[in-house]
Amino acid sequence: MDFAERVVKLAPEGAYYMLGRAQALEAAGREIIHLEIGQPDAPTFQNIAQAGMDAIAEGYTRYTPSAGIPALRKAIAEDAGRRRGISIDPAQVVIGPGAKPALFFPTLALVRPGDEVIYPDPGFPTYAAMIEVAGGVPVPVPLREEQDFSFDLEVFDRLVSERTRMIVLNSPSNPTGGVMPLSALEHIAEVACQRDIWVLSDEIYARLVYEAPAPSIAALPGMAERTIICDGFSKTYAMTGWRLGYGIMPKPLAERVELLLTHSVGCTASFTQIAGLEAIQGPQEQVEAVIAEYRRRRDALVAGLNAISGVCCRMPQGAFYAFPNVSAFGRPSNWLAEYLLEEAGVALLPGVSFGKYGEGYLRLCFANSLENILQALEQMKEALSRL
Image (cartoon, rainbow, N blue to C red):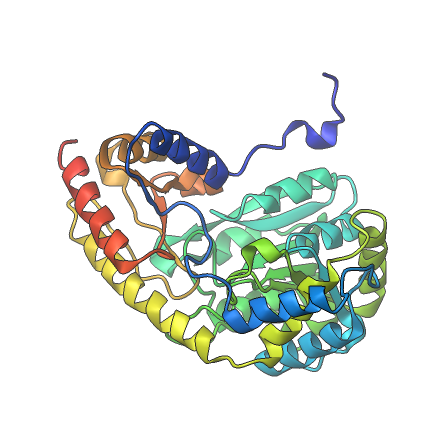
């Protein structure tokens, strides 16, 4: 078929491809340990689920304003502002069905054909996709293992040009688990202010940190008027299937993004938004308990990976991913991921699924039970010893 150029280069996310491969093996009778999909293994917290069910029973099943119900926008403004040390007006908050609209729609609103957009590589595959759909030119900046997977600032400085319209950041990072240090954010902020460049900061994993909070570039001087924050409820509150996210941005841009929501999805389900209100305003002890459990799993996974000959893994500082270096095996990461699925019964992702600079790495999600993680490590060690 003759498709429009904007969709010709779109490709599936590697996680969904590998999930399909793993499920096919399970259907054939194989036991597979799933470390490929980036979602919490725990159910949505009971108080949040109950709030959603109560909302349906109370009639919250009708249209809402496209930007979201006022009570939730206000709660997000207060909560997100307090956590980042900034002042946010509810009119700056735009709620969408998942966090991806807060990535895609600001990009559509700002990036013109031929504009360059700098983004992290390895990085979330949606970044390159949204840039190309908007007609922009994707410009990847490598994340360096020796810098705990922060931006290579020397390469960044060389790539910034008069055509740079936007810089995409993701900290804590998917797939590396790296957290960008304040010094790197200050460097990027200085460039953005000097050259009048927008910054789209994907902070969906901001609550999932293990040593120190992840700083937000939005809190730096001069950045409030040029930063879009993307965040949501999926990872922190185990609400992946509820589809609830938001963007925080300057008011004029929020008005444009609201119109894009109006003419695409209309609005986000009202009962989902009521559940989100409970997530923010309800008890947070469950979040802290989940983070403590992730930390326990992270420590076990990284120690186990580093005990496998040929594998070297840095300690992720946030999110729930480990990104080990497996280049010593001399095989492409796609090949290794398929090998470990077939021979070890462990589903994980090749680093190249996240960009060309991800070659030589694998991504493992530790949002799975400690028992499964330890079993996966044992099976991987045995399979890799045969190479």
